[in-house]
Length: 110
Image 1: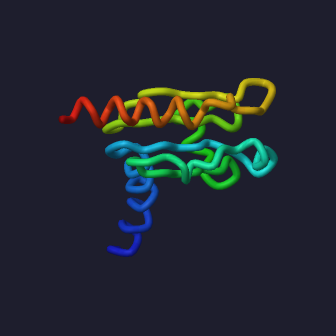
Image 2: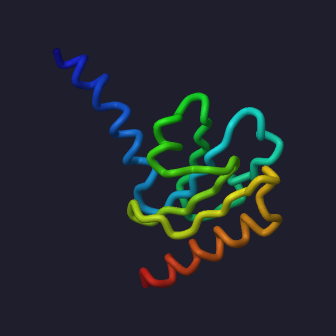
Image 3: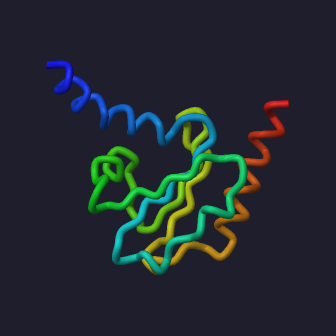
């Protein structure tokens, strides 16, 4: 019985984790892998990449329309969303826009 409870709760824990504190989530798919941005360059945030083939429920709940899409969350609230649009390419300044918003959040804390 306890095992079934853990199995059922695991997806819920994962869902809430990716939006905690300051986090950057890249919603993507294998067919647009070349269009993804390298989120490892982002400082002071948790980084997640979710693939449509593995995490479809998150794409639906977050109303992701374009791939790839990068979203910055702060305490479970969406701060900024950068979408690729029909061209399947994120803007060149995506990382700068995200890092700028993270820096603003951090400044407000102090």
